[in-house]
Length: 169
Image (cartoon, rainbow, N blue to C red):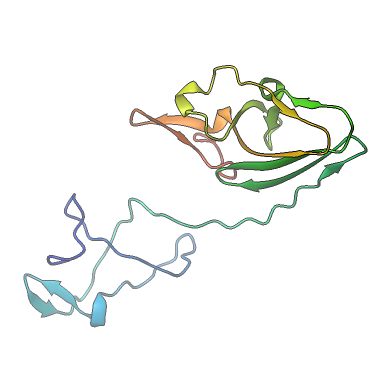
């Protein structure tokens, strides 16, 4: 029914919906101008059913992470689906070293996972990472990601968003 426009590679139609749909809710989807093109002729269908196989959606979270601040250092962080942005500030007169291979992410179920830094090739997720040295009075900004959220799908490694449950959960 899509005519020459909106056909996907498997012969299905592509539609965009900009309103939220609740589970079990029925929503009428209409073609442009409230009609559908069928073999280059305009017709008004009596009834149309669509099966949604793939749905992309946007999730917005507002997560407040309490900073850690003492006489020696300050750590602030911000969570996003693609990682944890961390700022480490050395407030002391001594060098501080961050041992990334000894840093962990603890998920909502209490499971710990090794962290990798942004820019690391996902295929190298299990290799040792060099420590970061923070001289006195300076700061370092880094993005880290838990290794447990890296999955292989269709032969490709990808990061599963931190906020979504792991597959099979």
